[in-house]
Length: 195
Image (cartoon, rainbow, N blue to C red; front, side):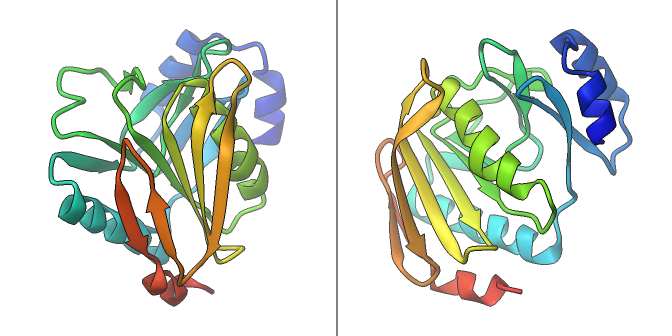
C-alpha cells in the first residue's frame, strides 16, 4: 500500500471515491493527508470495544447513536480527505439521505480504536486527529490498546488542524467526554482487551 500511496499523492477526491466504491467488502479505503490508506479489518477485541462504547452511549444519551465502522466522513477541507472512523456519534437518524461520504457537520464525536499494525501511530495518533480537528468535530476519542489508555481530544482548531486540549487516562480510570457529548465512561472493562 505504501507504493500506491506514494503514486496517488496528487489523486483527486473523485478518483479516490471511484476506487473506494469498487473495492471488495473485505477492504476499507480512506483518503487521509492526500494518500490512499487501507484500514485494517477489526479483530474481535476491537469489535467488542466499539460494541461496549455503543452501549454506553445509548445508555447515557439515547438521543444519539454511535454509528460504527460504516460511516464515511468528509474531512480535511483543504485536501478533501475521506475517513471511516470506527465510530461517529451523531443524533439518531442524522445520516438519513446522505450518500456514502457525509459532511461532518452534526457529528459530535469521532472514535478510533487502535489496530495492531505498523501504521497505527501515524494514522490514529497523528493523521486522524488532525483530520477530525480540521473538520471541526468537537471530540475525538482514541482507545489506544497499545498504550492501554483512553485519549480524549477536545477543543478543535480547524485552521491549525489540531485539538487544543488532550487528556489521557490509563484503562481503568473514569473518563469524561465533555459537552456536546456529555458522557462519563468507566474504562475498567478495557483492561480485558489488552493483548
